[in-house]
Amino acid sequence: VLNKDKQWSHHGFWWFVLLGTSALGIAFASNTYAAFWHTRDMAVLFLAICLPLQSQVTSVKRIRWWVYSFLAVVAYVGAFAATHGGYGPSGAGGGQDENYVAALMGMAVPFAYFSLFYEKRLFVRLALLGAIVIFVAAIALGDNPSRGGFIGLCVVGLYCLARSPRKGLGIGLLVIIGVALVVVAGPSFWAEIGTTTDYQAGTGDIRLEIWKAGLRMWAANPLFGVGAGNFIWQVGNYQSAAQLAKFGHSLSGTIIAHSLFVECLAELGLAGAAATAVLVWRNWVGLGAVRREASVKSGDPQLDTDRLQLRCYSDAIRASMLAILTNGLFLSLFYYSHLWLLIALGSALPFVWRRLP
Image 1 (tube, rainbow, N blue to C red):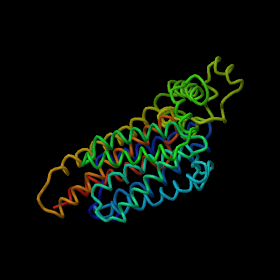
Image 2: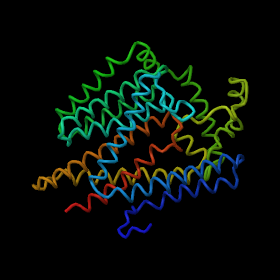
Image 3: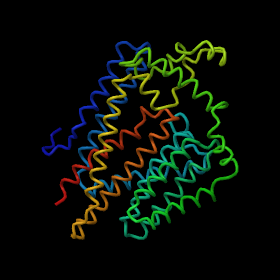
Image 4: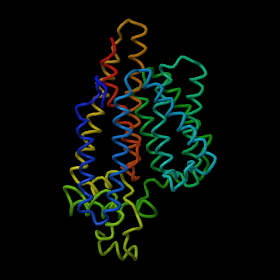
């Protein structure tokens, strides 16, 4: 607040629109306790973490330190998960079961991958390669492997290949990732991945049913939804007669949305969805502009190094967002910090770019 040279993006207003929409839901949500605490947690995340992060990341060096600190944390979680059946240190109660760990690993892979294109120190390069192997191992060694995590990893791989500054090195890195996955993953992993397209049984069938109920929930409350954190308490009211017969009981209080998109629409309505879409899209466009401009060589060695790093970070954040949005098709990630941290970091990059000589 006191910083004279504020890094306040044009779309920063939409953070408060989203937070205000969540706060408004407290007044009419059926479970005001859930609505209040979800709004409180979102306020802490936005006001105490994301917006300060956007303001304090003011140089290429600070971005690099953030990225390496993030990779170190995720490598620790990944190493723990690889030796504990895919569960992170805080376990399922702390949002680190196999699915959420896989989402976090997919989020981190692009940062390690694109950092390899500008990093010249051998020991750091080896550490980045080791981190990628750990991320892949955490996904592959889960007791119940995440199909969404695997799809997210594939999406990340395609983006990384398409945007690699040096295609030869990029292909080599992807080969390493692929070999690591083949070596680490066992038959149970590939058997589980083989059921990805089966939506008529198991968790695929259940997800489709709750998504249908969630869309009915949104249709009945289109503008502001049913209130933050209220999907789980309201879903039974939007079950069809066929669904009630199928499950044999009301789903209220027993199941979450299992989709970032359904969760957002059902709980915060069009207002929340619009604010989220603007934040994601404007961030994506801003990163694209930095990437395009940073691809133009200046002839100054130091400046070219900074430009290359900003180009790599722009692509890393974009690919990481794709990983979270892909995993978000199957996971309730809306109130987790993943996407919002990426938007905050991505919003800082255009300011850092404009400060370069």
